[in-house]
Length: 343
Ligand SMILES: NC(=O)c1ccc[n+]([C@@H]2O[C@H](COP(=O)([O-])OP(=O)(O)OC[C@H]3O[C@@H](n4cnc5c(N)ncnc54)[C@H](O)[C@@H]3O)[C@@H](O)[C@H]2O)c1
Image 1 (cartoon, helix red, strand yellow):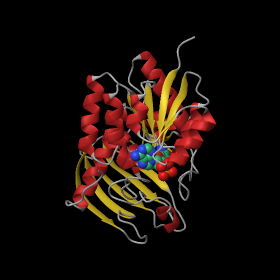
Image 2 (cartoon, helix red, strand yellow):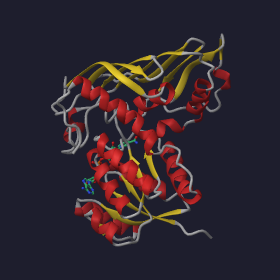
Image 3 (tube, helix red, strand yellow):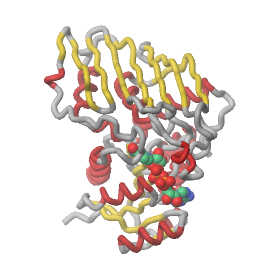
Image 4 (cartoon, protein in one colour):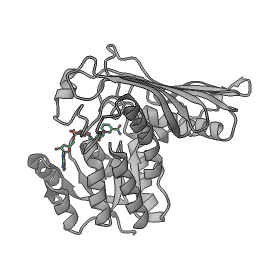
């Protein structure tokens, strides 16, 4: 029997607990240590699993018992913790976004490349079969020339949500609706449309919550392929509406409601019947961040283990995850050139 991948989880909060449940289902990996700066959380989680607990990442890494880390801490900490892990020669699975500071992510990418370490990011909406079918149709030219792509996230978050942890809604640790909630939809948009060359217009504001970062955003993009794009994101929408991605080419178009396709066709024909398993999650996360399916997480985590074992790139590696982070950074910089994002 192959040796199991030894993983240390960093951050035992809401997402960390979700990841721990998933790791239990993956035979080829085992959690061997847990870390949370909040001692009680680290201790309770470690005792439940029967593994050592730590409150400092450096101490967990220094114990020399890990092959990989799984980072589930506030977003602004991801890059620094991943860099520590890479310096300790550990592979890295990281919750979205990779970090808020793109320069730090660039340092991480080059360190991982130098050391042949696997870096994967949990952008799980990309993993569905329908997303893959639509992506294949677009990249194989069935949509003709891409004209426009839009991403719209109109969700609701209460003030209690932002008040529930000190890091939420801060520029240093979270960012606003674009960085936290809309990053998945922005990632899907870039997956289909390619890299953003320029943000032509961007507006961000904190409209109806007491928080530092934005809860309402609008941007107009130009992609490298010359197509235009629109991003609208808000957590002010009560009742919550949708997360939608729409792509229009000269020969085809598609509309997603979350990861479920609601319209798809090219070459003059509707093609909904070609979409196997178009049962995507609609409405996940609209009001409650934990009301999401963890199926995509399972696929990404299984793939992470296999990618390390087979020495191949993971499904969504660091370079891929950087594409939507770059779009996000360009939007923020256009809207607020003075803004300092991340740590
Ligand atoms: N992929 C998804 O769909 C999805 C959904 C929800 C959250 N997330 C991401 O997961 C991450 C965590 O979110 P959450 O909702 O679990 O937050 P949370 O506040 O519930 O948990 C964060 C945990 O990190 C711990 N922590 C903080 N600083 C630390 C440090 N320096 N060292 C070790 N532990 C530290 C906290 O004590 C807490 O237990 C965020 O980056 C968020 O964007 C992803």
